[in-house]
Length: 225
Image (cartoon, rainbow, N blue to C red; front, side, top):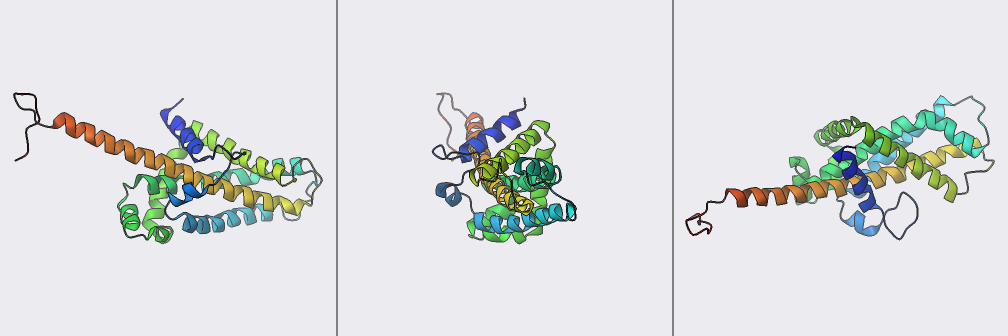
C-alpha cells in the first residue's frame, strides 16, 4: 500500500462530517475553507451533464430494464469511467487550491478572485496534469471507483430508487445527482489534502531553517546582524 492512498483516504475522512450518515456529505465549515467552491460546482455541473448526455445517447433506442438495480449496473459500464475522470479533476482542483504552491492560485486567493480560476486555461492545465498523476496510482483509482459507486448507490437507496421497479429514464437523474455529490466531496477532500501538504511544507521549512542556523561557541544561535 502506497503512502499516497493513505493520504487520499485520510483526506476524504476529514471531509466527511461524523454526525451525518452516508459516504458523501457536505458541511458549511468545509465550504467556507475552500475558496471558489461555487464556481467549481458550476463548472463541473456542466461537465457531469455532458457525461450524462453521452451516456443517455449511448443507450438511446435500447429497451432498458425497469429493475433499478440491474439498470444501475448496466449504465455504470458507460458512466463510471468518465465520471471517475471528472472526480479526479475536481479532487486535483481542490489540492491546488489547498496547497497554494501554484502562483495562479496564490494570486487568486490573495485578491479574492478564486472564482475566476475555472476560466483560466493554465489552471485547468495544471489540474489536468495533477489528476493524471493521481490516476497513475492503481490503489487511488480503485479507491475513487469504490467511493463513486458507494455515493451513487447510497443516493439510489435514500431516494427510494434502489430495489424497485422504475421508469428507466430516472436513472440519469441518479447519475447526475450522485456524480455531482461525489465531485463536490472530492473537491473538498482535495482541499484537505492540499492544505495538509502546505502545512507540512511550512513545518519542513522551519525545521530546515533551524538546522541550518549558525551556532556560536556557547551553543546559542548567532544573530544575522
